[in-house]
Length: 66
Image (cartoon, rainbow, N blue to C red; front, side, top):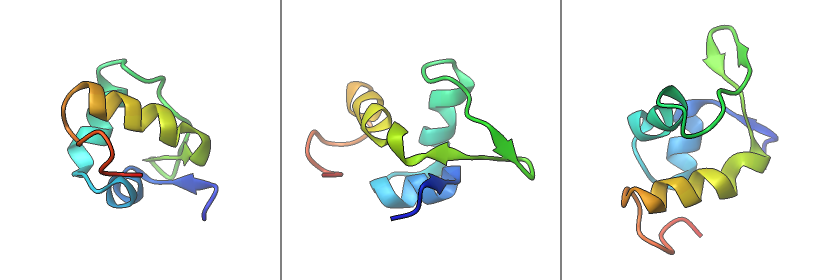
């Protein structure tokens, strides 16, 4: 499992669309991660928090991404 993901890679991993991952950072729900070459560098450790936020918004089912 990689240690970092782009926004697109995170969306694919979690079975959602990219804009939903982007929105979590753009609206301040989650702190903006570092960037490399203009792309977000999302650490693997953020996966549980991203999943919780997606579930809270109803964007993924409770156990869909486990």
